[in-house]
Image 1 (cartoon, rainbow, N blue to C red):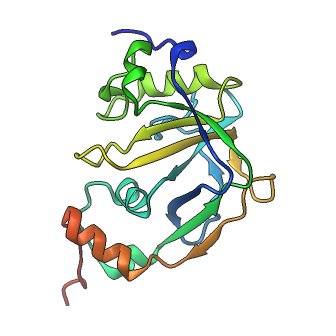
Image 2: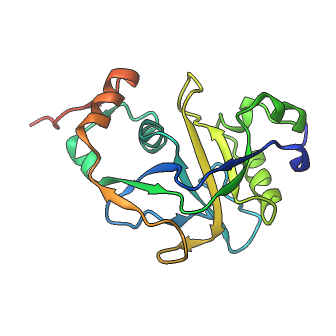
Image 3: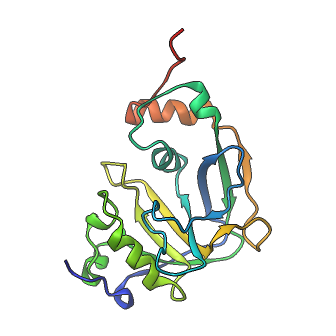
Length: 191
């Protein structure tokens, strides 16, 4: 397995004003930097650091949240919320979605599959070097949906100088788009 050379990873700047989306548990705040071993790009080998996952499209946030659970109840959806931010400053990330990333050792295996060892090692190597990374959503077989793994101090980060989030219920239009494009179903539970 080829090691990833972080110095050769292409850079991308997400400009101030860029809008990002996150679906999360409705009773929790949107800004949480996860350091558990359960997130693909969590820097598990760097104590005190974590990752907050945002998406470039609302549908990408849906797919990363619900993954392969294709039949949901209205209650399943209601336990989640959609948060939206607009970057208030530029965000510098490493871009795993461009062809030039292959020269650094990146393949689609880094964003797909169940083994998080390499992606978490990459996240560890990027601490102090980059604000995060841009990647293709692993649960989108077309490879067109994009997400951002944003690095920060582990834990809840309310009021920590991050962009303010607007949080709403998941809109019907997004549920309809997920149904139409991915065949997710939201149906009442059986009586």
